[in-house]
Image (cartoon, rainbow, N blue to C red):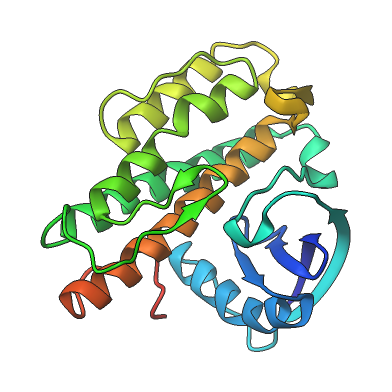
Length: 234
């Protein structure tokens, strides 16, 4: 399997994204380390998607974005060249299904944590403020990008209810726009460029970042739990 990737970096500090499977990403202090991590990340993502897992996985970098952002904290503003293309109805349905599955699985992981307000993680600050430490903080942070992501493409969504419920309502609002599958490319907040394809990828990516953090925190704080909906352990 040839995994085409987008390389976003600030100097050597690297975020590497697979164009497919969508949502797969790795980080590292340089490109080499991020590439080495990608094989296992792709396997995990494919298993989560219930897709076939190939024997051979090769990484090919097809797009590069030099950034001034804090890449080590997963600050990102890249839009993939592929994210400027229109969506077919079939593509949209498939990506929406994954975005809703991701929200559902994130909620499942959160509800499996023995105590949502206890964490052994140390305090740490990033570009967006204090890093969420507890499961509740991670969940609220992840849920509350819903309105932001949708509003970047002109959809006035909200963050009410569960992460699954507010995301589902956002898609319902989106689908009332007659031309949403044309995937218009727009300038959002802070000069960042957005499209519907990018929103769909960002949901999967952002969920996965914080699901990994929550899963690892739970292992460290409470010992091994029985809930691994994102297939981080394979």
